[in-house]
Amino acid sequence: LAERNALRNPRRTGATGAALMIGLALVACLSVVGSSMVASATDELDKSVGADFIIQSDMGQPITEGIEKSVRQAKGLKHISEAKNIDGAKLTLPDGKTVTKDLSAASPTYAEDLRTPVVEGDLAAAYGKDAMSVPEGFAKDHKVRKGDTLTVAFKEGRTAKLTVAAITSDDVSLDKGALYLNIATVENYVPAKLIPADVMMLAQAKDGQEDAAYASLKAQLHHYPSVKVRDQTDYKQEVKDQVGQLLNLVYGLLALAIIVAVLGVVNTLALSVVERTREIGLMRAIGLSRRQMRRMIRLESVVIALFGALLGLGLGMGWGTTAQKLLALEGLKTLEIPWPTIITVFIGSAVVGLIAALVPAFRAARMNVLNAIATE
Image 1 (spheres, helix red, strand yellow):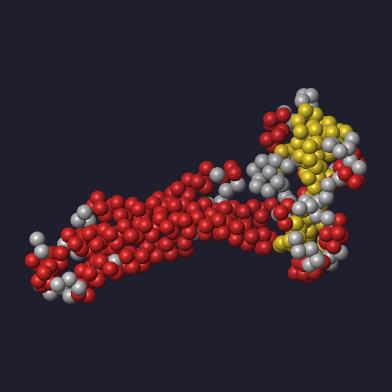
Image 2 (cartoon, helix red, strand yellow):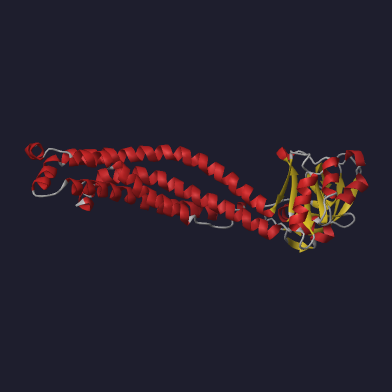
């Protein structure tokens, strides 16, 4: 009876289910995209980051000499890599054209701590004397090849002739498009007082001393509350928390749309009860109990809610999957379907349907049988 009643007015039932469908489709789509973002970031960290610890200041502030000294005093570290941004370097290309680019100066061990794939050459060689690397896109745009010599005019220093020792892949999310060179190369051409501070430090622990090294770094830097020391687990959790906060904000806004959809279910059921007043009276007269009447209305509500949820979740997962495929080149490489969330939302839709039916079911069950039968 509940199933047939839900189908008696297909247009009204469809409109009611559509409102719920749209809200849940957006929830499912964002859940898929959010989960894929976390999974992609996690996979990228596992694949690209060889360092055990990442040391950065809040809000992108540079790492001062005091912070650097404290990091170097930590125990249990195998090596420490520094990374600096060299702004506004002018590169004269083999064809004579000049472009202005920011360079990434780092310690030679940076190639081990951040494993950037190369399409040609050897990244370790790019950290050699008077050498550098260029990204794949830059090389294609400016017809730069491995072995070419670029004239680099440092903004605050002298001019250097650097050999392209490696061409790095653009198929990365971390440090995409970076032009790497050794910090020692910068020191040879830029006065020490004009060399910028580190923007980040990476560290690798000695074998079997990861926990001790982490504790030592924390202890050394406890006087610098603006500096964060993260291991890979911390970094992954931070990414997950950031995505979660964004999704929670969006879910809060979508909850308003879902509440409106639930009110639509209540309204549909209320109209259905009013239209079927005489029918309800007749069913009660031939033996349908109040409990059975309430159950019928509740099941009718659940059918409508699950109809909207099934369509919405299916549509939303399709949207989310399409979005992931379209954004794969932007770093969203891993598709992750959040099945626990999808199942929870589906079950929650049934619960919402039961709640929406409370008032209409109570009204139908409390209806006077004789008055209902006499209704025209």
